[in-house]
Amino acid sequence: MGYVRKIKEMTKSNNFHPMLVKAQMYFHQQKACEFALELFGLMPSEARSSGAALLMEMGTGKTIVSIAVAGCMYQRGKVKRVLVVAPLSILSVWKEEFEKFADFPYTLTVLKGTAAKKKEQLSHLPGDGLQVVVVNYESAWRLEKELLFYDADLVIADEAHKLKENRTSQSKGMHRIGDKARYKLLLTGTVITNRELDVFSQYRFLNPAIFGTSFYTFRNRYFDMCGYGNHTPIFRRQMTDEFLQKLHSIAYRVTKAEFLDLPAVTEEVRTVEMEASAAKIYGKIEAESYAELEASEVTTVNILTRLLRLSQITGGYLTDDNGTVNAVSRAKLEALSDILDTAMAEDKKLVVMARFVAELDAIQELLEKKKIGYAAVRGGVKDRGEEIRRFQHDENCRVFVGQIAAAGLGITLTAASVMVFYSLDYSMSNFEQAKARIHRAGQKEKCHYIYLVCKGTIDCKVMYALQKKVNLAKMLVDDYRKGGNPLKDNGFS
Image (tube, rainbow, N blue to C red; front, side, top):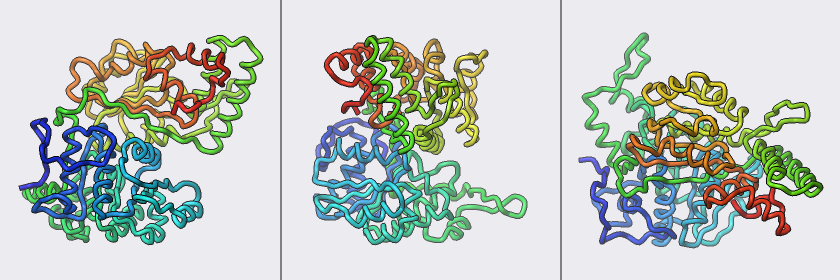
C-alpha cells in the first residue's frame, strides 16, 4: 500500500510533534512535517527514507513545512547545515519566510553576485545556529565543487520540476549534491509534470533506491519505445500500480481542493530585486521626482503623477522625454516566468493582472516564447466575451492576461484559482474588483494571490496601502507633511 496520506478529517492531532515555527500551522502542514520526520527517523514509523517528496500545490505552505522540518532536525542534532536550491526569483522568499517563521537559532546566506563572489560567501559563512545557504539552480551546478565541500546535511530542492530533465548539467549536479547529503526534501506541486518519464530525475536526486540510478533501466522497465525509429517512450499502463506505489512510498500530496483546513484566500507578496542598472535608474528618477515635488505645490495629483513614473520603472519600463518606451528591467518578467513554469507543471490555469501596456506586451511575448496558450482582455480588445470563453473552457488556453482597469469588472475567471498581480493599480476599488474575478460563485478551489513587489521601491507603499485599505494619495501627502519623502519605501517592505 502506498505511503501517501490524504487527510479527510480536519481534526487536531493529539500526538503532534512540536514544530519550531512562529505560527499556528494548518493541520495538513502539521501532517506533512510528521510525514517527513517519520521517514527521516525522528518519529516512530516502519518506513525510512533519506528523501521525502512534499507534493504541495501553490499556496498550501511547503516553505513553512520545510522550515519546521529543518528546525526539528536541528534541535535533535541531526543537521547543522542546510542547502536550499530554488529558482532565482524565489531566493528572497526563503530569506523572508525564515525571518517570519523560524523559531530556532539560524544564520541564512543567499548566494549573490558573480561566481567569485558566491565562492567568497561560501568560504566565510557565519557559524551560529543552523547554517542555511540558499542558491539558484543555475548557480548550483556551476558551484558543485564548493557546495560539495559545504557538505550540507539537508538539501531542499524547491520547485523541483526544474530537475525533470535527466541529462542536463543542472540535474546531474543536483544528483551528485543529493548523493552526499544525509537528508533531502523535494518540493513541487506535482512530481509528474507532463509525463511519467520526468519522475526519474527528481527521484534520482531524492532517493535512488526508489527508481534506481540508471535512466535506461528505468525507461526499459516502465516504457515501450514506439514511433518512427523507436524513439518515442510510451508508458506501460500495466505498470501503473507498481509505478505509483513506488512514487508515493516517499511522497505526501497536498492539493487545495482536498484540504479543507485552508482558508478561502491565501496571499503571497513575492519580493523582486531589480538589476543594479535598473535600481540606479530608479534612484535617479526618484531623486529628481522628489526635487520637483519640493519645488511645486504638494497635492495628491502631483504626488500620484510622479508615483506613476516610478511604478512604470518597477514594471521594467521608462518613457523618455520623446515619448519612447524603453525596457530597463526584466526582474518581474523573470519572476513571472518561474511562476508560469510552476503553474504549468502543476497543470493549473493562471490569471496575470498588470496595469501598463508595455507590461502586458512583455507578458504576452513571454507566453508566446514559452508556447503557452493564452487569452487577453485589455484596452482595444474587441471580443472580450470570446477571450473569456476560451480561457474558461479551452484546455489549451492556460493563462489569462488582464489589464486591471479593463478586466476588473463583469467577468468570471473561475477556471483559475491563482492570480498574479504583475503590477498594482492605486485604486482600492479596481484592486478588489480584479481579485474578485477568480474568487466568486463557481470557484471550486481555494484562491491564491501572488503580488510581485520590487524591493525598496514605491511598490511597497502601494502594496501596504492596498492591504491596509487606506487611501494611498492621502497617506503619501501625510508622509510629506510630516517631513518624510513620500516616494521612498521607508520600511514598508
